[in-house]
Image (tube, rainbow, N blue to C red):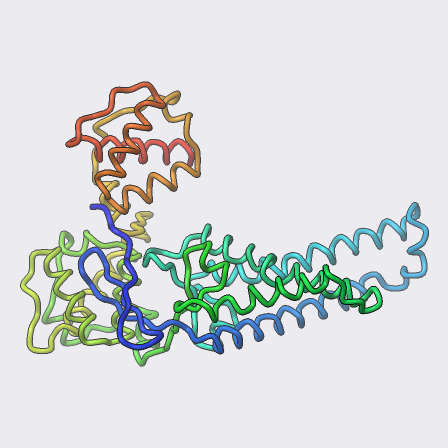
Length: 381
């Protein structure tokens, strides 16, 4: 029921890595090169620069002929110009930060520059890319890039005297700019803090047919899956299966087919039929999930599905649930997904002590934690 995070491992080649899922599925991937990452950043900064210039010119146009009254702050003209100045500052902040957040929080996990260069953001633990990861890696960009550049530009504007502060700012900038050159995973400081890395996202020939439910094919008639056989998986697994089919690597196809068969009680396909099996399962799982969404039922992944099927065996009062909030809810979800017995025991004992309950015996610790997580989430939402 719980899902362990994917664990990175070293494979042949300088940029090749392998993610191993809880079911033992090996998903090879390739880290983006340093040059590609630099090119993507340069494209993004160019786009941001264009947006900044266009917005500045637009605001100047809106301000019209009021520039002559800027000295009179008490006048209506002065207040209007102050308003435009505030708008400009807000726009500059949004372009510098919200641009990256908006695109990297999207389904592709990539800005426009990254899409042009064929790379994307991925979680190093193999799980889904969370909002916390994206926010952390992009807020660090201010420390890595923009702040030292501001200091350097400020020193240049004061007569170009490169004093100790300016030299420190240059060293600061170079340390962070060259950080990807000194670790094998090409991580910048923001990636290290956020738990992300940047990987290649090549487009395969299945690109056009994966965006919609495919028309019935011979493989669909050869493999028919019932409701119970499609029920174990959700949207996240559907996306993983789509990625495996797009990449089309033989070992990954075989491992995924064996894992699914083990889950639904089928005999694994042989003789090169693994791809046909997976295509049929993908098509029918997607149709199954879309049917559920039309009726208001959404299943994020196996973890959410498993919790939804669990009847509440333990009840907590509002006072017992009030001691924790949103950060602790995310921590509980991570503990349940990882499923480490020792960690579960420690967390259960801490919660029981906090709310004044007797800790359950080892056999009931996970059920206790799942019940608390489910009811805390319902309360917070």
